[in-house]
Image (cartoon, rainbow, N blue to C red):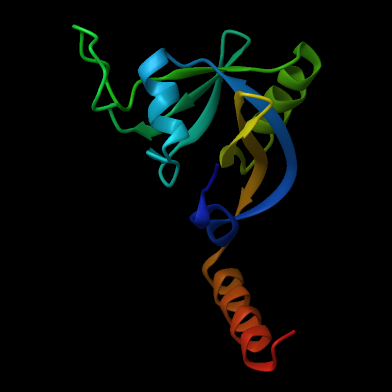
Length: 141
């Protein structure tokens, strides 16, 4: 199972990638394993020395018998090493850099989130990327 954020490479220039664990409840894990996760509008923020995933939508698991309703877009804690957290915090304090989720996948029965330090692209850079993609498709490179 691998879920991609397709807009990430289009909207941002990805500079450096990190692998993070994600704290989920039982029904959320089952829902993510079925592929019901949307990362298109999600981003990562560092708060109080911890990384948090915001705006990621995990569709509620239909066969769950939990009495309480879990908010599908709640903030979820990310698990990273302390050195990685410090590096991410320094990168976000620089001008124009942000943290975005690139993909979500399973690794040894654990759900991992790949996040990247990214710099936003300008409009003309996006057009160039589309031209290169079309050129490669046309000439089958």
